[in-house]
Image (cartoon, rainbow over all chains, first blue to last red; front, side, top):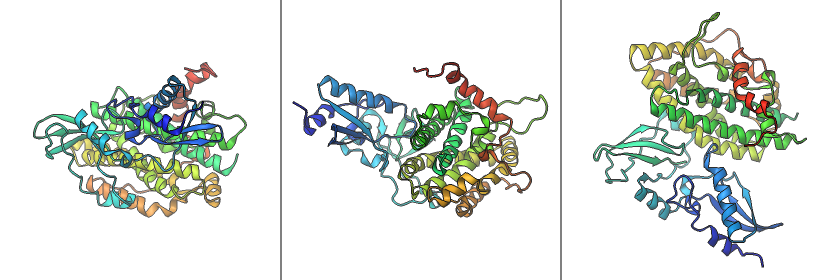
Length: 166
Length: 260
């Protein structure tokens, strides 16, 4: 008997991101949809950064998780609409914070490139995930991965990663 | 090849060549944070190149793959801007050699990111839905490239006498190469006519505004333009692209069909 859409969701519910294992692919907003296609069930995933080395691993993880549960489904990669950090669940953001990564702010609405550059938006304070202080400063726009920036807390002096709005 | 394929190759070659060039900093960055930043920018660019080559390969058909497009085309078949293939230092003559100059890297990344931020935004309205999807993703990434290179442009330009002089020299060297942006190639003209591409001259005023605001903050002088207009996007390149491609393509060519 073939699996149902609910069974596929249940199988993938706890599948973690390979880079940040405290958050699940579903909470990250990478797992978009499970649907029935012409040739059976399809799992729709939307890639994050174009060059993210974890994307291949994520697809392999989804495939092997389903296989281990005896579920047959194909994986469809969908680019549009583009993945955004706004799809991250509130639970997921809280898990990031507990793990020591400041979760992303909401992406700015309707900001065109020219406005973005001529009047750089006053940078929103990024609260320190360790002590909660908003007295923080960016050290580098790129952290350990493309999706993160490196910050430092001026109060507790701890460095931390900030998951950038995308 | 169709107008769409030619145009996609131009966009893809730009991303791949600059991604490969900037990756030369991996392990050699002036400070650890910048080493990591350039590697991350390269990852984004090579990721964008892959999406574009995959789309070009699909539209082209006939069994062409993204790897064939990246690794088995020669210098004259590459359609990137000449600006992007130049080494990370100023002009040299004869057998002179120079070490990597971070001012050159930052100036080039800034001039190119400012263009691509505008172009990806405009390409979201491309008649080709797949290109539009790639543009929407790439726009999110290039905004961080632009923010990064603009911040460093200001830091170097408005920094010490040495950093100011080197970034001004890099700007004087590289700025004339941007003239190539505004002279449409036949491939671009065909893509614009088909509604797939964007006429860059419609973006020039915004590019000038971004560049002038940043140069002013960086206390750098905008160089005068004139002289030779490069034609890299028509396949006429400087002597530097061949060396870059040789390094990038040699492994794939030594082991054709290799899988790892």
